[in-house]
Length: 579
Image 1 (cartoon, rainbow, N blue to C red):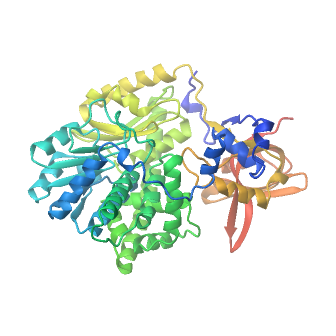
Image 2 (image 1 turned 180 degrees about the vertical axis):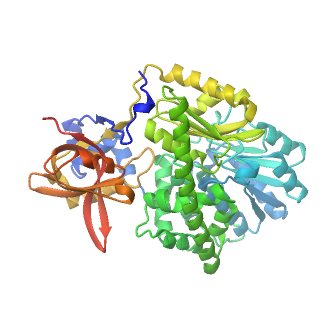
Image 3 (image 1 turned 120 degrees about the horizontal axis):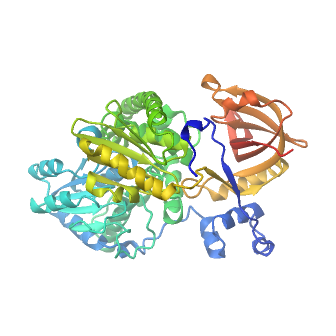
């Protein structure tokens, strides 16, 4: 049954789910692959030799053979090419998150390389909200735009799409979000999740779909022997990696190939803006963590606290001095965002503890909340209490909310059950957003609470931790570390492997970080000793002592400090060892 959130500890321990051992005959089929790598692939459901080979060669080129299996691609390419030849003004209508901004930049850069008269349009988060709006469409029409191409939005904007058609705009919608039962009446719709689309990979991010359009334009240009363009698809892959990772698109299949190649491009990027942002972030290595924790938050800060066009300008500028100025501003805004998130998270926590200690779903609405960070606040509530969370900036007439959820509860399906309450809504299984009339907030809270109780009631809601293998510490050697690199890039749906070691001894321990938030240890297993860091485990230090025996779950990583590289364990959970 669901437990009271009032009793939830700040350090929430997890239920470990240890993967079963792969059959011995399966391991023996792959003598050239490290057995632990075979085991991890087995855990991920990858057992076919061809699938395994493809997974372990993630840097190979992505195929273009399926491009025109994407429903709407032929019509999209033909319309764009006609617009370019006729010098028609084209607008790329994006979104204010990193996926939307990178997708906007990618298509503007691509069309500009073909000589198009193209401009970006990204709505202001606070003033306009997510997605298409009729005022923006009318403004673009009045400004002479004939063709509008959306990226990362539009598939659920049925009324706005109808308005665009009524005023004479040709509207191409490219959007990776799950469509409603009724599809928008567009000039063309690029969305592999639409029922009639045979495109084999369904999980491309918004920037991934924009890249598919760019690939198709480049391919048709080559086939028709048109005017050469000074652009290759490789020039765009840094943007694809940024948007795909930041949007938490699953790093499987085509996404994984695109991100692997995109990381290579990011390491040698010629974009002054990205070089400046990397410099301000202090990142020494460039991988998916760099995007997730350094680049992504800084780019997102523009749309959260100001206007996402600042992030777009950073990606598009060719002037190093301009790049430095914008990167400095985004770095400052990101610090402001962090402080505001901490402040509002404390307030949201107080609200849910006061009003909903037994709830299956957490709901907090307040006029002081900022729509730019309500998603981050909801994430913190979900992480701490392991409940779906809804956090709302309550406005005088309309309110804007963000939702984060747990694997047991598909939040967008829950919102769909309340669709008549919303002005607009949309999202994925784990995250969603909406705009609602403030007068309907009480009804929404009641409906979502009932849905959550129906779906989650009776379950013991505990976060799980998937453990790939139980190892002795002496197995953690250089050859294993390098073998595990074959599984990169890691991210959503392809997590960094987690291992467990039982009965390790604490050799040293102390707290580090602001207010001792983190736990720093040395742990030993026989004659093998490793450094270990447990982020946000600092409060456990007072209950631990040298010589204590622990079961630990961790990732095996390399840490650089003062120019020295050494292996360490990044602790994901700690339990007292069985006596």
